[in-house]
Length: 114
Length: 160
Image 1: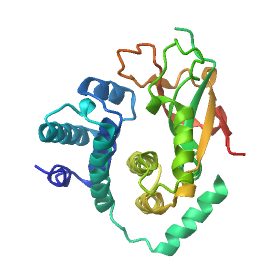
Image 2: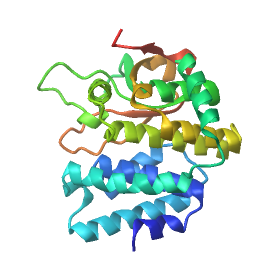
Image 3: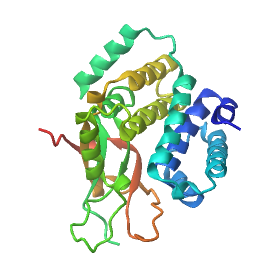
Image 4: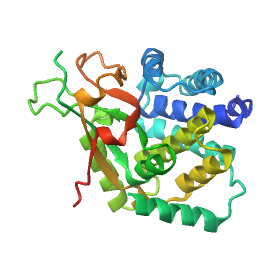
């Protein structure tokens, strides 16, 4: 099963949450225990229930593909997998209906804020 | 374990501005006490060290690293925050979409780091241990604050 298939079953909110959590799992080299410990302290979103199942599927997929636990993978390899997830996230969130001028104006306004 | 006097968190200008403008000046932060200068003391792993994270942002921006892992994580975090705030009813769908677009399109300089300095006493009832899993460093400390009011921390730009 590919990441696309796993994330494709989720609505947009759950897919965003799943990519965020899976990326954290991978980039920090977590294991199931530490991941679940972090989750207990983290914000709770309505999308989280579906997202967590997808994260475990993604982790299982990676561990099967590499024959090793996530935390045993080299950091560069873990980050390459995160990059794959980010590409899916870009598709999930999509270009939206916003025109570029509106986005640029919002960015300018935010720069004034900082 | 004694309570720290201060907690530190590294944010980015973009994430800070989004929270100020759209999230009611409430900031979602991961934070940690200062690193102990004693080399024999327990230390957080690098990914949980705000100062090291700050330097990583600076290095990646100065190097024009379009594939920076920390900046990618920040974009992801801003998008996740927007989705969560929409679910809470704090922002509407067009605003969430605008934040997503901004997070995806913002160039590297918008991710210049900022250091939040947070008096522990002001947030003691808000901090949750983040549960670093490092059996070699059982005293490592990292916390999550889900909604940190702007009035509860100072912001430092170490590049100035």
